[in-house]
Image 1: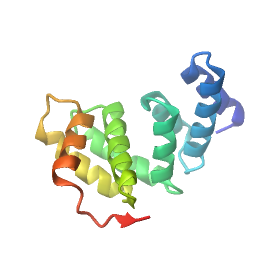
Image 2: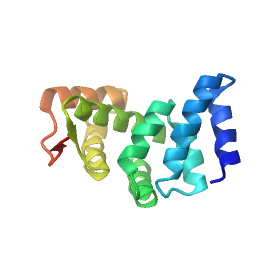
Image 3: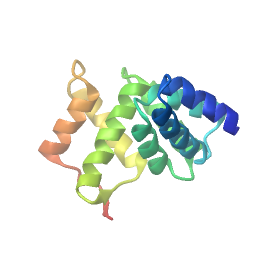
Image 4: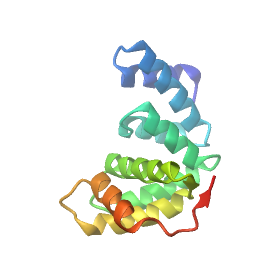
Length: 145
């Protein structure tokens, strides 16, 4: 993705706030550097609620963005939840792990969140994931950082 395209996406997301535009530009650059294609970066930029979420997503996708995105897309397609809801749940999941000094792979998070989608379909997915983590934790092979 070209720098100009990234700037244009960042400008649209920031809606005139210069500091926010800079944050979006950095976050979208990080997403782009994971190996995602232009269309995926655009879609994620429209679905992330803020640059912090986009930065966290870039961190968990690391250098394998296209593969990670295809797995995420398969989960979203198989679910009644939107991409924005899934991204919010991913954000909740990894923030919870970070507070505990732990880390997991994205596919582990997606599996956990997938189970949460069936728990209470009428409730926001972010709330369900947060409650499940607080009640049951995460016993996956998350490592301490």
